[in-house]
Structures are given as structure tokens and as C-alpha cells.
Length: 132
Image 1: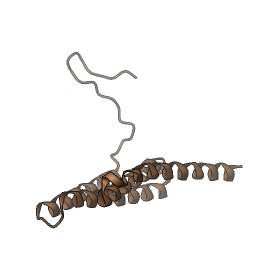
Image 2: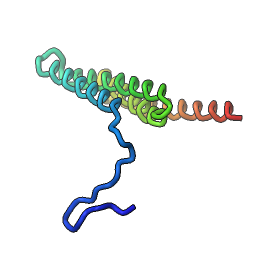
Image 3: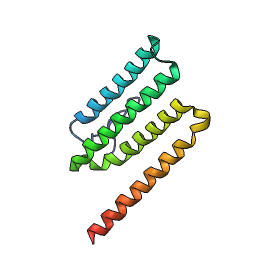
């Protein structure tokens, strides 16, 4: 199906999904509130800038993990849960590295990526064994 539109106009493409995903809006709102809360605490002097960044990354990790869990429980959104869980793990590792000192703890990011890869492989292996 070719995109519609005349010369000089932007093409319009049909939506894959008819309705917007309300779960996405909810978790986007939580992520924005987390960012605002962290920025406010830094602006008020309650946290240093790196502490506020670390807090935001921790809160973002929690939001992403919760989003992944909710999507995993619904069969029609289960395929979106793995990227969200991986993003949450990377955010948590980055938060820990920023909190503990990025110059010494940057390898936590590599450990988080490796752990996510191992978990994904184990889940796929377990799914293949139960399918037999």
C-alpha cells in the first residue's frame, strides 16, 4: 500500500494499532514524574547533581521493570517486556555506577549487559525445552 499525499505534503501511513496504548502513557508519565522529582530535589539543594542523576536513573529502572512486568502478564504485549527489562537493568547499573563513582564503577554496565544476555538465553532455552 503506497503512502498517500500530494507533492509538497507529508505522506500519511495507516496505523498498525487502532488505539493508542494506555499502558505506555501511564509509564511515560511515571518516567517524567521521576525526572521532575529528581530535578526538583537538585534545584532545592536537597541532592547534589550527580546524586539527583543517580536517583532519576534508579527511579527510571523501577519504572521500566514495572512496565516490563505488567506487559509480561498480558499476552498481547509480552513481546515488549524483554527490551524494557534490559533497559531497566542498564539504567540500574548506570545509577549504581554514578552513585558509587563512574570512574571506578563503569564496568557495572558491562556486567548488566552480560547478565541480561544470560537471562535472555536461559529463558529461551527453558522455553525450547518446555515446547518439546
